[in-house]
Amino acid sequence: MSLSIEDRLALQDLIADYSWALDTGDVEGLVACFTPDARMVEEVFEDPDIWEGHEGIRGIAEHYRNAPGFPGRQHHVTQIQFRPQDDGSVKMRAFAFVTECEGEPPYVLRFTGWYDDHAVRCEDGRWRFHRRTVRLWDGEVLKNFPGRGEWVPRKRPESLIIKR
Image (cartoon, rainbow, N blue to C red; front, top):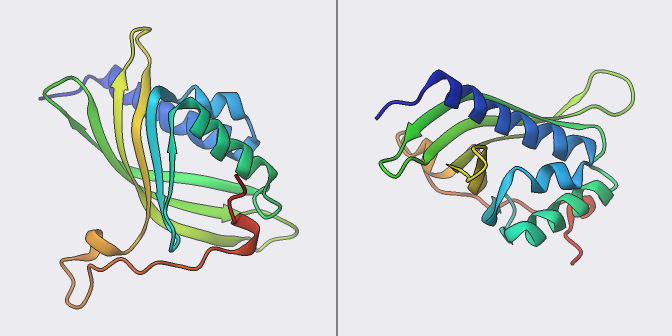
């Protein structure tokens, strides 16, 4: 199954809209990137977080908007692979890294990982995330390397502890 150039560009715009909304504290902009029944999972720290529906997405947006260590971060996404599905949805995966731009350069590379996404075209014609999972660059993506392939949970920094 193929994907039109227009759809590829729209899906790239969706990914960019997500990053810009998250990194500029635009809560409603972030919510607009997801379907009402969306599910976002952060499989980064020892206790993965799951955010469901628009209220859940609003919760993660508010959390990061108010986290003292978050302003100044930029989410960069590259190497997007598009995998159209028979039902018209698209699964995607992409490299992700986060820089921390606070104070004077040099800046810090804060995170390297990948997105595992599932997007759907909504009734208004726009693509939105139905499922989005954030993972560290370890675990299953490294399974072809001897001695690798297991996820190693990381300790959550104090500044990113979720307060619900």
